[in-house]
Amino acid sequence: MMNKANIRPAWVVILLMLLCLLAFTLIKLSGTSSPVNNNNQTEPETPSKIDLSKFKNAAENEKCFSCHGQSKYSYENPDSEKTVTKKMYTELVKNRDLYYVSNHREFKCTDCHSEDYETFPHAGNLRMEAIANCIDCHGGDEKYAMFEFEKIDTAFLASVHSLKHNEDFTCWMCHDAHEYKINARSNENLKETITYDNMICLNCHGDLQNYQLLTNKAQPNILSKHEWLPNQASHFTNVRCIECHARNEDTLVVAHLVVSKKDAVRKCESCHSKNSILYASLYKYQVSEKIQKEGVIKGLLMGDSTSIGPDKSNTLNIISLIIFGLTILVIIIHAALRIKK
Ligand code: HEC
Ligand code: HEC
Ligand code: HEC
Ligand code: HEC
Ligand code: HEC
Ligand code: HEC
Ligand code: HEC
Image (cartoon, rainbow, N blue to C red; front, side):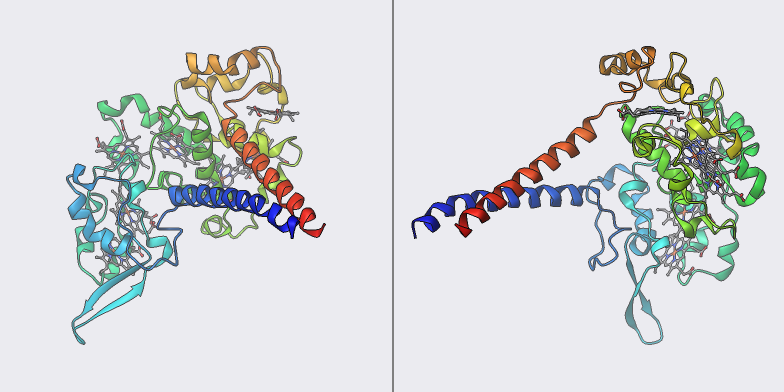
């Protein structure tokens, strides 16, 4: 009897901690969820964070988003005069939140797509519509000179992707028309840029369906192909694929000449040395006080492999979560033992 009375407060503490953990997880999940991933949702997603009134074309775009903005859509069947609700194909669902922070957020859908899409059902021949390429709009435009579109185009045309797949492989394959936004040039968070850029490659090299749209060849397993690289996970989260796979050019912020695998960087000293290639690529726009404060530059100069790399706050967060989880586990075991007694 005495024992049971003693245990109660411990259980209250455990329950509270578990609730905290649950709440934290839920907050995290809701922050990152997107309509695309929410296949089982039933209500149309209303834009959560974006103030649509700031965008002059938002009302116009809602006509498309009303069907393409979530996992289901409805239309009036003129024959039965009934409203029919159907499932939208996942790959045709576009995310408002991502659209309105992307580079082309000021665009109407019909700036790139035919205005005939305003009618539903869409005419069959619309599937054959040709969409303008980057260079069609940005080529020779003074306003975008700093991006050097022509130079990127030349580099891209010499890349393995373009050489092997010609015009089937377009700029749009890496730059999702509805989501692409500049990171490397302007994002102060290096980790975000690394993840963003690597996801572009992994969208095919980690996704069989997308990969096989281009080729019937078996997809090489990206993890086993890099087994020779120690601390693979650490490298994949701290350097970009293009650091090893694309030839760097002086003025380009982002290297676009993806070379064949035999020319990929394999030497450790390329990065783990005083003359790290990362100065000319990854850290190009980060050579600010920020990085010096974080000790990255110092680490590189010392050729110290363990101190090279951007901030570790993410890792720290995860570690503290694990410690938190372990603490709870210890408490539970402890309490369980006491009940047994
Ligand atoms: C009433 C719902 C509805 C509306 C409104 C609508 N769409 Fe669609 N759209 C669909 C469905 C369903 C499909 C898939 C079937 C098809 O291709 O017709 C589709 C397909 C598409 C495709 C892919 C065609 C392909 O290559 O297979 C594009 C692009 C598209 N819509 C653009 C638009 C644009 C732009 C607008 C706004 C001007 C718009 N849609 C408005 C329902 C809609
Ligand atoms: C900057 C140009 C651009 C804008 C703006 C744009 N799209 Fe697209 N859209 C594209 C391109 C490029 C493709 C890919 C065509 C391909 O690969 O066949 C595409 C494809 C699509 C598809 C077919 C599915 C897919 O991803 O291949 C749908 C649906 C679609 N767009 C809807 C929209 C809607 C809705 C809007 C407005 C919210 C919009 N688009 C705005 C360029 C654009
Ligand atoms: C239909 C014409 C058109 C096409 C095609 C197009 N763009 Fe754009 N792009 C524009 C316009 C216009 C703007 C300026 C939008 C604004 O000021 O809000 C822009 C903005 C941008 C910006 C942002 C510039 C800044 O300073 O914020 C980048 C980067 C960009 N485009 C890259 C691309 C890439 C890469 C492609 C191809 C994958 C592409 N664009 C295709 C017309 C186009
Ligand atoms: C194999 C994938 C891939 C292809 C293909 C590709 N890009 Fe990129 N591009 C990237 C990546 C990754 C970035 C970095 C995005 C970021 O973090 O800002 C980028 C960035 C850019 C930028 C911004 C650079 C800056 O100075 O801020 C422009 C402009 C651009 N690409 C244009 C193009 C054009 C034009 C084409 C086609 C000729 C093209 N890209 C094809 C992967 C690709
Ligand atoms: C530290 C440098 C480095 C990094 C980082 C790196 N790779 Fe590699 N990768 C290589 C080297 C070297 C090879 C050649 C391996 C071989 O030939 O056995 C290779 C091979 C490949 C191949 C060819 C596989 C085959 O055999 O057909 C692909 C595809 C590839 N990498 C994609 C990626 C992607 C995507 C990323 C980012 C997630 C990445 N790599 C990150 C160095 C790197
Ligand atoms: C749209 C899909 C797609 C995207 C995005 C993509 N790749 Fe590829 N990549 C392919 C395909 C398909 C092949 C196989 C080409 C072949 O052999 O036919 C390939 C081949 C390669 C190879 C091997 C070349 C060789 O020598 O065999 C490397 C390395 C590579 N990609 C790196 C990258 C990097 C780095 C990125 C991101 C900047 C990237 N890829 C983005 C589809 C993609
Ligand atoms: C493209 C540049 C690049 C290449 C090539 C490269 N590394 Fe790294 N490596 C890094 C970066 C950046 C980090 C930072 C990771 C961090 O700070 O945790 C790292 C981390 C490491 C770590 C782990 C340090 C830690 O604390 O997690 C080891 C060990 C390592 N590299 C060894 C190697 C070896 C051995 C090679 C050659 C086979 C190699 N690296 C090739 C860039 C590179």
